[in-house]
Amino acid sequence: MELSRTKGTRRSRRHSRMFAALAVGSLFIVACGSDQGASTDTGTDGTEAPAQTDAPKDQDGPPTGPEMIVGMVNTEGNPNGLDFPDIRRFAEASFEFMNGSGGFGGRPVKLETCVAGGTPETSQKCAQELVGKGAELILLGLDLFPDFATYKAAGVPVIGVLPILPPDFTADALYLTGGNATTTAVMAVIAQERYQAKTVGIIHADNAGANSTAAGVEAALDKAGIKWKAVKGGDNETDAGYLGLMKAANADNPDILISLYADAGCIGTIRGYATAGITKPVLTTSICSDSDVISQVGDDATGWVFVGGTVERDTPEKALLQKILAPYIKNETTGTMGIEPADVKTTALGLGGLGTILVLSLRNFAAEMVAGGTAMTGQNLYDFLKSADGLFLYGGITPVKCGLATPSYPSVCSYVFEATEYKDGEVVSVESGKLWDSTPLLP
Image 1 (cartoon, one colour):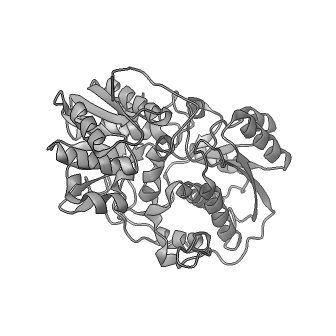
Image 2: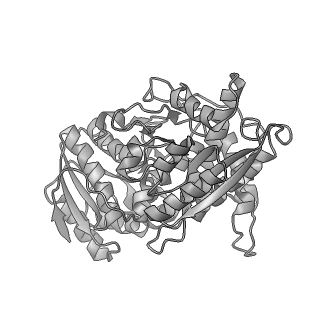
């Protein structure tokens, strides 16, 4: 176990699941699981999320416009854990639905996909391949090293869902979310606004992804004037190890704690917190609010706040998404593909949820653009997204307004998150419908 106190950000070209999933784990829930009847605080652009949204409607029959070639790059098959095929698969499912239900702004889509291997060379090869196939819009699933130069030279616009490395934030592209940059800034915002914290203890694994994520939290805390101490542990600790980490982070009696562990680390840190008798608030990610975690830790999670989490509610958006994805999910009983729509757990789609959020959000934007009299092209959709007001990610809760934090983040299009906490035996909203704005503390 190592104590560290380092300012600034630290980046690496190797990324763990934590690096990608910090924002992603909450993104899908925010988009589809929120209470449509809840009041919502002002978002980053001064708008409010609508009190309720109309059900997404299946348009009559297949589209009649000219075919549109859309390219998609996604990272799969990398032996270092960079393997996200469900992003591509769920995007394919969404376009298949659209092609039978009105199309993409009235145009049928031919989706051309290319698998990047988590290296600059494979990303460049994909860019050249998709441009050569005549794609008029490029979508990025998870692509660590997008070849923006090739896309720009060909005049093909690029829209992604999750920026990863620093160049993404200032690229000639638009990203529907801000990734870890915005999520970690929201942690600092909550520490400052809800808890008036002056000191914070941080625990995280000592690997490239977790170190990078921690660096984002630390930079935001620095901007807020909040002192912090970070404690690093292993990727997988024993119960005694997690207990030791919690005690070390709490040794100087900080006002609150922040834990960046995921998956099994959620269970270990929550149990260590309870065993140590700590009662102060802990901020962590929505990954730790997963039902599999809560079912094991129970009331030991009292005092934990899950940044990006929200309470799942039945909504029209959720029902449509379940319908779209049901054929693409494996039936664990029969071993074949396909389950009943009602059995699709929208809060358990993992990184695959990125594909649906990207495509279905763009479907809604395209429909609004065409309804306003603009022809459906890749460039027109890009320009519309870059300049339009009053847009929301699929689900109607998270506002989309590109470039609010310029010049540092001109490609980012959403900046807010909700949060939940464990209280009286269940996970509930910290403040019903509130959206926490990351922009004041973005590094």
